[in-house]
Length: 182
Image 1 (cartoon, one colour):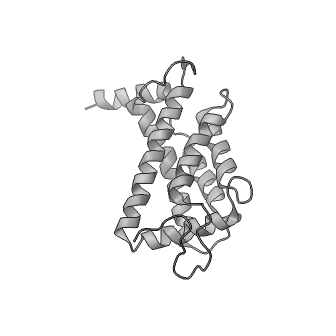
Image 2 (cartoon, helix red, strand yellow):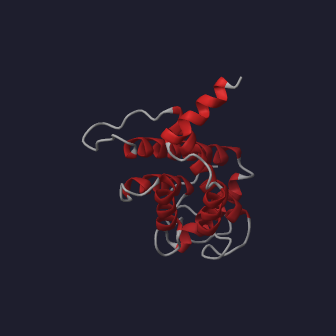
Image 3 (cartoon, one colour):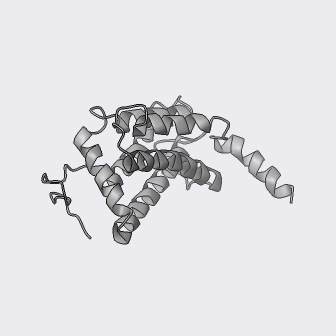
């Protein structure tokens, strides 16, 4: 099943309100680029989540309704699920590139360095925290702006990861120690 912008979902008489999971996933990853450089990675992620997932601030409430409907449909439609997976992967790569550009010694005038394995892991963990929040919210009936909405869930997921080594510099020794322990 393909859905083009302006099309309607079954049971939804209004056309798609130009909010889709793929665009939203990319938007939040790119929002990390726009936060002040002095913020830590968790602070930047927090800011990006709040600024892109808060209904009426970073996203129209009807767009979140659309995302919920699409994600529910994706559970029963392999083609739509594949599109969602590809969108998530693209956003994760974007986030890894943004984190590499924010890293120590990064110069905005120079091209961004290729993300290290550690930065790719950081991007994957952060992306998973947000993805699971959005998918869990979409599977239920909670209000988008409530205590179990996507913003609240994503922020709780980040809080649960408070001991994660968010910087590549702090992650590298732990990864190297693990490989040396074998």
